[in-house]
Image (cartoon, rainbow, N blue to C red):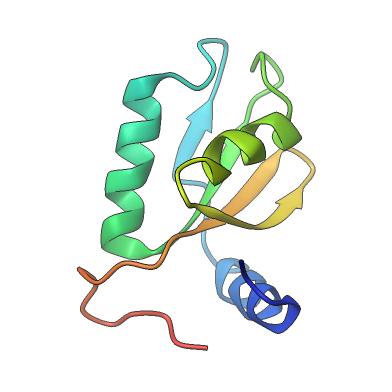
Length: 95
């Protein structure tokens, strides 16, 4: 579980990045979740955009990701900022 200061730091880092994945009418399936986990293992931090046609709400998506030990640093409208610590990263995010 991230502390408030850690979430603030991650939001600051995520401010300059664009959403990497878009979740549309197909929703969150196993392939999408697997790709997100692979991306987070290499980058630790990412943004995901939920399109209007997505069958899940941002809160439901956040709950889904928390089952995979992915931290939701922020929900802005239909955009989620996700973080997962990884040992595979050359330059890991330190708090």
